Image (tube, rainbow, N blue to C red):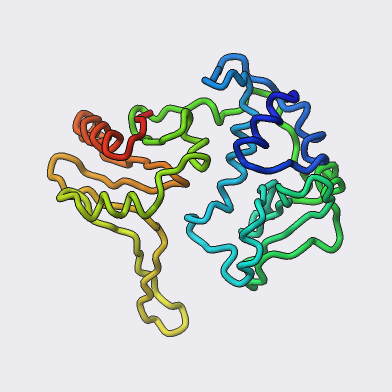
Length: 253
């Protein structure tokens, strides 16, 4: 990464990245095979934006529910413990060396990690399951997509969708007005103690396709729409996605 890459990230995310994170990301490989309209010839900014997706407000869980005052901050995900607990940093605190932790079991929410600082975590190879958070040494797969006309985004790359998102409210309105969609957000699970069924809104924005010619559903994913359909529907889905993209002023990838 170079200064142009950092400037692009900070401008589009409206933040000043922690210097410890910037220094750590400098060796991140540049990707000369993928060039974007802004002229940045690297996939490093896609990597950083992708980490922000974990704390996008339309994610399955509301990380800020018990601590709403933290919504004004921007957090960047940097790792996890493999059990659903996330490690992250304050993306808008350039001089901070704090390592933050989101614990879901028990649901203690956000907290500053008491044992480690950010620099220690980024440089420690023994902390998480014997492996630290390492910079990859090969081309990042984030810019290699095989979407085949199944992703709709307003950005010039689907992983940038959080910067110019299709909102969940917009998509819900399209579903409401469409004769071939119906929301399919909930799943039913069984309470292991009472054996009673529990309805959980596990997939916000997921819509089932009711048209007889297309079998599948459209998933809302961090400001973009992703089509999941059966193989025999391949030809029909292209027309559907083009119509949706036109309605939402977006692009089909």
